[in-house]
Image (cartoon, rainbow, N blue to C red; front, side):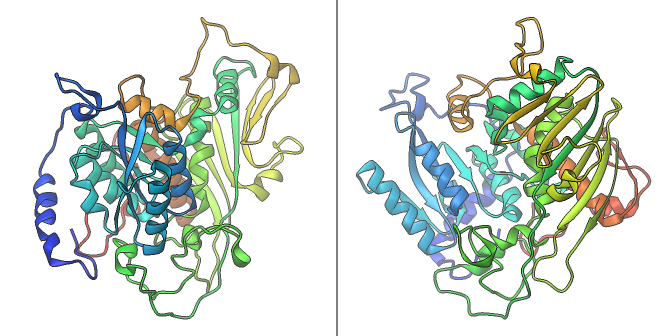
Length: 456
């Protein structure tokens, strides 16, 4: 692994330890006895020790949600390449616990070798997720990972392999899996309340744009080389790697990097994975993918951002269901869309429809909203709180609502759709080989190079 700019010499020993750990292929599925007092050990508490990597708005929000359960979780470390953000998080944690036990790190590899850390929260920019997840798996850290798990299908495959071999608990940050309305919508569909499911319409926000920016000096508080990591070298400008800042400037609070393809595939995947995950759940295909994918997208030219701002992708499943994924504006105008809807997931059957998003559950006929799912029907896994579900899973009380297999397929469908709008042709997917049929160009797009010396 690469020593980033300013990486001090006394850290070489920990890099040797990281390199040695990379050769491991399998770990037992255990929670450290120091946490739970197993195998005769006497634990001071049942708290899971947690380190938080990435401290923008989403990362800080996740950290606070975990920290809220102070009887079960102790945040012991924070990590970010932005010095200001990590020191602010460290101070916040220390004030919360009324002590100075929380350590701060610039480089995630340092905290990974700490034996007293049981779990990590990963909320770094998307292009970093595969490398951090794989290192966490090697070091036997349970993890709560924000979407996506990979910036390519091949990266997602490597992540899945590492997680499965390590036996750790993995929770994907698709928190809608723990939402009551989303679960009820899927149960209504899976139990035939709308008749035979025929079509699913999914609408999510389109990617935003940002003009080209002048090159600027790198702030002293930012390790820019480490921020870029496996992404291509690029001149620094504030907007390129601006953290998510609430209500800042003409772009609102959202980070611009979400819409730069070197770091993210844009909203087709970053936002799309949430609603596509629910679409897969309601279709009963959350451990598979469509067999054909075809679509079109509109990409900005001459901008700092280059992710699709508009798109429409048709996905055909082996069970005959068609899923149409669109940006919100295109979804709202779709001829099959119910009036007043656009954003969210619309399940359409031959006897009615169900629509769900984060604000409400709707249906036609309305009587479906009062339906009760019987004990002898399909009752989907119930989780009332995504973060609590993760901690309970680490403690062995339950299983994660969004495990690594669910994460892989929800993630992969996003990447397949991105490739479809880039190639602008109908692609056939082989679910067994996990590759496109007779399409070398599309198959090459299942992977992407990493900047040396970073590699999976």
